Length: 184
Picture 1 (cartoon, rainbow, N blue to C red):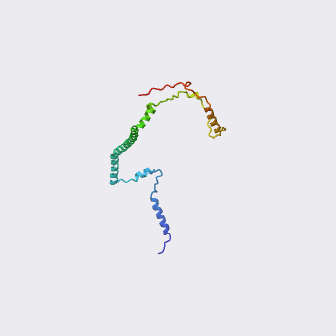
Picture 2 (cartoon, one colour):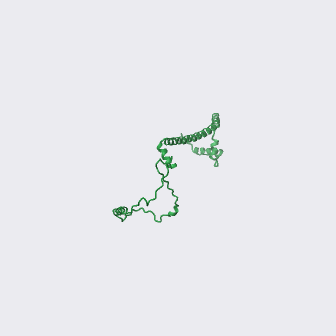
Picture 3 (tube, one colour):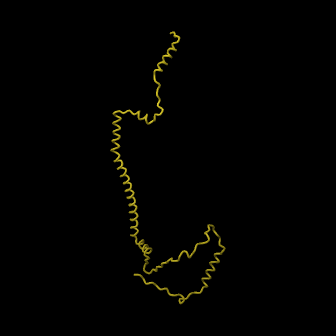
């Protein structure tokens, strides 16, 4: 097959004439992604049916879901209240068991009401001295150990000798202590 001269040139001119007749493609520069997404949606009967079922399901389920969440919160609050009451019950049961013990009752009567057994003497020390009279310690407490220069054996012997050589008080020197009347 022989090639004709100029055949390629003729083909080129025909192609350029064809392209000149076609309009240039328009490219949308300002087109947003949302606009292209919406234009890309194709509505069919099945799609519309599914969308309607989805909207209907949301309308039907939303109130029930809200009630479910509220009820779960209420159940959690009531469970916390039950747990608190159970701990109170166990604490009160243990306290009731302690009060069934006579030794505990006697100890509480001594501590709270200052009761004593017959034949015992009760002393109540009232600390009515104002703390301001004592003042504050000027020297801070040291964390270091200090060694004393006192011989403990010599101090013990001096204490024994001073106690043994002290004048003995006679019964006439000591004032009688009044005895309280026994409580019924």
